[in-house]
Image 1 (cartoon, one colour):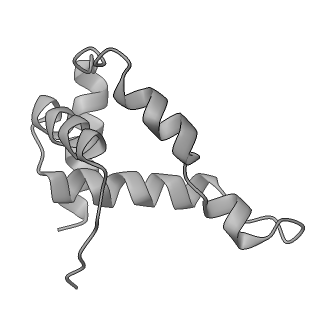
Image 2 (cartoon, rainbow, N blue to C red):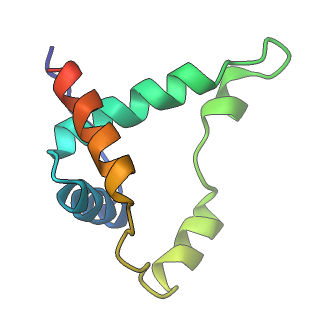
Length: 91
């Protein structure tokens, strides 16, 4: 199934760099990341959905634009292999 995602420019750039470092496609990184995120988290019935799913506040987004660029991702060989296997399973 195809989907369109709108991501902040800095998140997209970091995601592309991370996927490249792992040797997987951006699509595979998104699939593995969402699978892992959904596997490890549940939405609390006590919290409104907008609180759980909301992103950073506009003021923190502005602050992050002026902060230094993050270093290249350092991924262990074992972690890279695990992510590549998971990405292949999702194909």
